[in-house]
Length: 323
Ligand code: GDP
Image 1 (tube, helix red, strand yellow):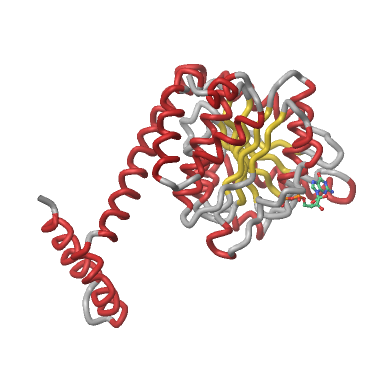
Image 2: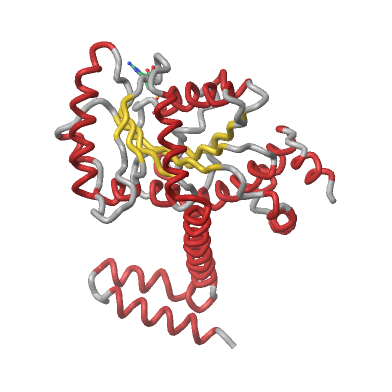
């Protein structure tokens, strides 16, 4: 057993950070080492409850996670927080990568916080987070929170990583309610309205009622679980117990078989995602495709060639290259 593996299994935070850095590396020799490491700790992974948390910027995600995390440390849990931040793709900067977030939680020995890995594609970022999740579990953390900014595709990727997907929402309904896409609501197992305090308390109550009826409408009626809408104040630390109890109730509703089935579905979805990414990469790199691609792309953009005709031609070039 390698030294790193041994220290990781002993729950050493430094070893965990090193292992994640190794997993984030794109160098081929690091990839090989990572695969070997992940393979040998498979029996020790999968033991944490995986909670996804998504919400728009400014809703209070880091305030909530810090308060919630500290609360759970007091109850004897070990909490890891991983971030999936697709924003760096668009803006070149990162919303969730900021090191000053959750300072108190990150100083605690029983917690572990990892900012989002940099990556070109959401798929790449999410894949590394999935591997980090396995490493965190092998290091003995029993609650893993995967955080993402609600700016689009990332919710789906995160929902495919976790057992329970929680939406953190601002104390406003009406127009902003229209803003949450149906697809995201369908992923949501639990909605939490934050900032239910001071002058915002009443608005939070109204928003909770609106979200509750929206969720009832949008979720299939046959579901065993109707996603509850809770109200908290992350700032004042109120309502956190209720969130944890609801998460536990959700876990009990799924049961060990339900969780295993969900993870099996997710693993299959990941398999296909990896295949699609691998194929696309191989396709782009294949010399006949690479040679023809710029001209065909330009033809399509100019409207002189239909996208499906161009795709067909490129796929034929790709397949012709195979032995
Ligand atoms: P994030 O972008 O979602 O991580 O949001 P932050 O945690 O950075 O919070 C954004 C702002 O909302 C900060 O100014 C927080 O102090 C404030 N905030 C967070 N939680 C609460 C809360 O429960 N009540 C109130 N009133 N403000 C909060």
